[in-house]
Length: 279
Image (cartoon, rainbow, N blue to C red; front, side):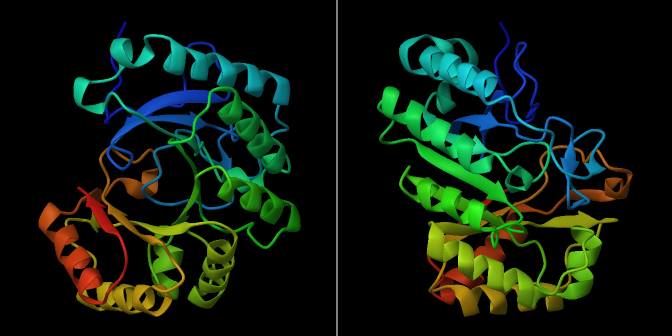
């Protein structure tokens, strides 16, 4: 039985459709993922994305009974069985979170809130008071009323939103996320999310054709975070650890740990709360 590694974040595990375990740099332990986009559909197309066969679109309807069965099975194996001992590296044998993070944007699903209700039910069954419930999102659907209901429930489940902000200039958003959005619209959604649930800004920094992000773009990013720091819980900075799957990502590589540390230091000097980085 092979161990999980931080280099392998495949969403395929056993014969499951929706549930997959990973060990993560950011969680520093085991994260139990929920993939609501098994058709690899997303409304963004981030150049560093590692989803093979990504398409523009929305997820298929979810078999909620099957999803609940898979999640129940895995939670029982982790909490009451030997999963961590058998599959996790010694230094990462901690069950950290249940994470809504799949092969596309989770909140595109109109069954999103129903899935959060299943998580709530099974967290209670297995008495998961310490583990987080994390939504990794581009924030594009946060203005929908049904999604807001789900995010309010998420906040009661030791919930966190990890809100994607990779660039704060229009050309950068278009280049990195391949969507035509203004930073004003992203800021509006970020502030709305932070009013519904504890919210972190999550940012991927990477080299393009061997070049780090420009000093001007980094400065704009730091000013943006400074502007919203009283509304967010913190910032998670990271770089690419695995090769992108999209052809647009052919020239992408990791920035150095020093590069991330420098940005983190600048944010800390602006009194931004809870700044963490992962090379």
